Amino acid sequence: MPYIAPSYTPETELLISGGGLITFKTHKDRKLNLSSIPFSIGYSTNQSFSLRALNVIYWKGDKMRSIGEFQLRDMPDNYWGIGYENGKNIPKSDSTTAYTRSHMRFYQRLLFRTGNSLFLGPVFDINITEAKNANELMLLDPNIKENGTDIFNTGIGFEIDYDSRDFVQNAYEGVFISGIFTYFNEFLGGETNYGVIDIDYRQYIPIKRKRRTLAWQVRSRMVAGEKIPWSDMSILGGPDNMRGYTLGHYRDRNMLLATTEYRHMFMRKKLNKKGNYNSRFGYVLWLGAGSISHNLSYRNWLPSAGGGIRLELQPRMNIRVDMGIGQDETGFYVTFAEVF
Image 1: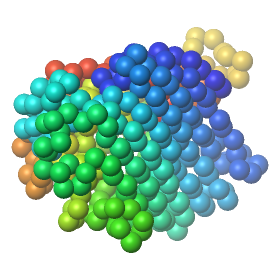
Image 2 (image 1 turned 45 degrees about the vertical axis):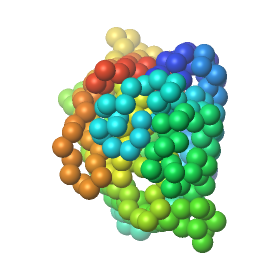
Image 3 (image 1 turned 180 degrees about the vertical axis):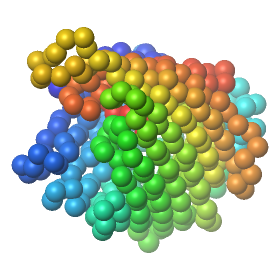
C-alpha cells in the first residue's frame, strides 16, 4: 500500500515523504497476527533526507517475534547541550545550536515466548552519528570535547516483556511491561562505554463500543557509565516521544514521561464490502508530560498535548497524522503505526 504525503516537524520543516506498508504472514494460520514492515523515504525544504523502515514479524505461531528498525538521516539539526537549563535558556540560532547531523541506526530485538505472555530475548543496537558544520558554542560543550563530533556505538542487551496485548502494532486491550538493558563497549567494536536501562509500561482499555480505546504509557530511560556520548543521552521530543517538541531539544542522562491517549475509530451506518460497520477513519487525543535529569531528580516538567486523525490502510494498520503542542513549540507528523 504506497503513499505520498506532506508533513511538517520542527526538525525537518516541510517534508514530502513517500512509502508503503508491507503486511504478510510467515505461515498460514488464521490466529496469527499480520506481520508488518512500514517504510518511508523523504526530503524536505531544509534539505533533510530520511529513510526509515520498521518491522514487527511473528514467527512459529507467535512463539518468536523480531521487532526493530533501520533509519538513515542527513539533516540540519540543533544541539542545545545537556540538561534542562541549556534546553530552556540557549536560543536556537546558527551560532548557538545549529549543525548538520548524519545518523544511521540498526536496532533489532529477537523475542522468544516462554510463557503465556512472557517474552525473553537479545537486543542489538548499532548506531553512528556524525556532526558536521558545528557552531563554536557546540564545539565548546564539555561532552562534545570529551567524546568528539563523530560517534560510533555498538551495543548488545537483553529484554524481558510481559505482553498481553491483542495486537502489537495497534492494541485495543491488554498490558505491556518491558525492561531492556543494553551495554555499549569498545570491545564490541564501538567507541563508547556505558549502559542503558529502558523501562516501558503501557495499558489499553476498551471503552464501551468496539474500536474505542483509552491507552496510556509511562516510560523511563536511564543511562550510566564512564563514557556516555552526547548523541545517546536520553531525549524528549520527535514523532514517537513527547510530540510537539524538537527531537533532542531536551536531553540528559535520565528521562521520564507519561502520556494518556484516547483513540476513536468511527463506525459506518451501512455495511462495508467486508460485511461489517467498521470505518477506515478515526481520531486520537492525548495529554502528556515529560522530564529529564542528571541524577533521577525530576523537577522540571514539560507538557505535551495534541490530536490527530487516523486512516486505516489495512486491518489495524493506520497512517497517523498528528499535531503536537509543547511549551513554545509545535510539531506536525505523518507516519505509520501508533506511538505506543
